[in-house]
Image 1 (tube, rainbow over the protein chains, first blue to last red):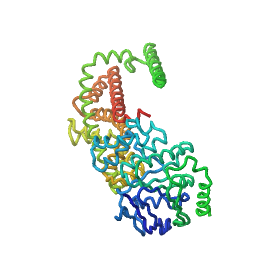
Image 2: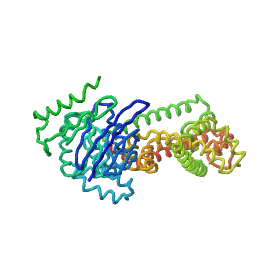
Image 3: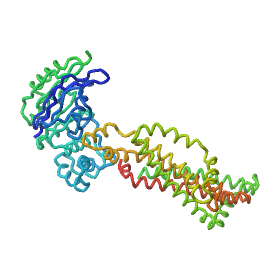
Image 4: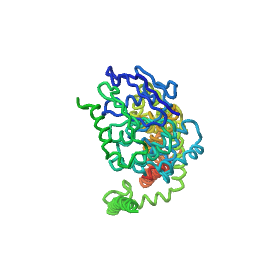
Length: 249
Length: 254
């Protein structure tokens, strides 16, 4: 069970309001995307949820308990994999367990079974530099999952990958998510990605950023192979484009 | 394999250059262009090295001992300074300029003072070596600590990591490259520092030996000891390289 509620959060930097009165909620095993233009306050909201910054107003609740401004409750994954170059993949993945106080041997043992599930078999003893960009992102997601198998925050996790790798990663991601039960907040500026992966989409728009729309993607999961080529897909896309407005305005 | 071959050929070039210089030098000496007592020929130097070998080794032992103790203390002090200055920004601001100033004071100027204060035994030498070796270590480590990736530190914080864990998992291993570059410099400074401090007062060591042969105008022995000191520095630097390869094995896997 993991349920996250962000309630009426506002945050300014240097007197400039970045996000205003943002409220979102993520229910158990749901994948919710937060879609918005770059510089629209997505990352600010993200830092508030992960507890790295304190909001000026509003609160964050995880499973009914307030966690506003408390790091160590929700972990995240970024566009940069942030794997430590001097640790093997398994030691990178085990890092959250080590931080929580588990000993090295135990932590290594605990992470082993997930390598196959995440399509990372055989990479345990390798260093991040020996892996491709896609594989590194998988390892980063597994590390996030080792921190919490309930809730993960993903900030544009695939946006640094090339289009083909990205497509493969989407497929992999949906596969993995079919097996594990993770509630996910997925931050992205890629509309296709959001429609393809999400159960619900929040659109963050305007200046300062507010939630301007909430869209439920009713297409059942696992999604059809060519869902992104259907008329329904385009309808969703059209609606989002209208709501998101002109980023240059 | 190809890289290894390239490595060998690039070394061949420098070896060839060295050989050319030695041959030219020998030629100059043999042709009598420079009198032998002013500039001994390479062959003379080698002869002197062989005949003086036991004495050289005896003195080298003393010098190396001083260098190692001084370097060890210097590294420890440098590490401690870097950690404290990284942790407390005010200390960084207060001490950094002072540390830079300590490096502008010429070694030869403070060595006699140290001898006056601490006598002719090992202590003043070790102190001098500490002064010259801690600086590169502190600066190198500080640069490494301060260039730690913000996003990585934030990520670890989001996982609940404390200051100590961030230091252990990110800052320290991230500064290793810088640390070893500094250690390479400090190792050669340690040897040179030991020799300089021996010049200015002491009972044995390569520096003492050097002043002795200089006063006797034995230039062949002078050159022999100069080459020995260079060789020692080179060997120490090589040892640091090997240590680095062992400690930073991930660098090999790229």
